[in-house]
Length: 76
Image 1 (cartoon, rainbow, N blue to C red):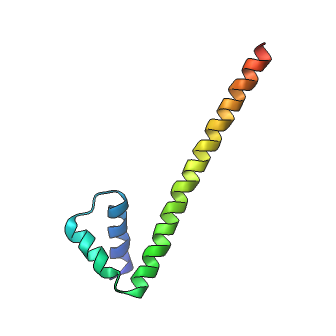
Image 2: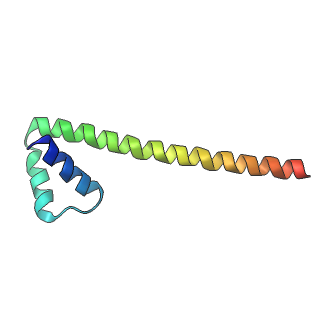
Image 3: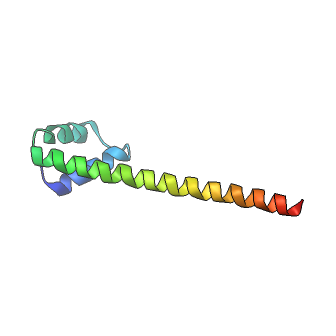
């Protein structure tokens, strides 16, 4: 399976917009070691991106709470 097609199917999978036929095609691609390696790298990159976004949002929320506490303490 070509990388472009694999990437498109993987995108549809993570967006939960994949058809049964497309999913079966993606599964058939798992028989090819090159496709498996590409999928592994792509899924890791996708997961890392999600985790980076989560950590950034979490840091921002913590900083906001700390600022609010500091403002309350300064007001007292």
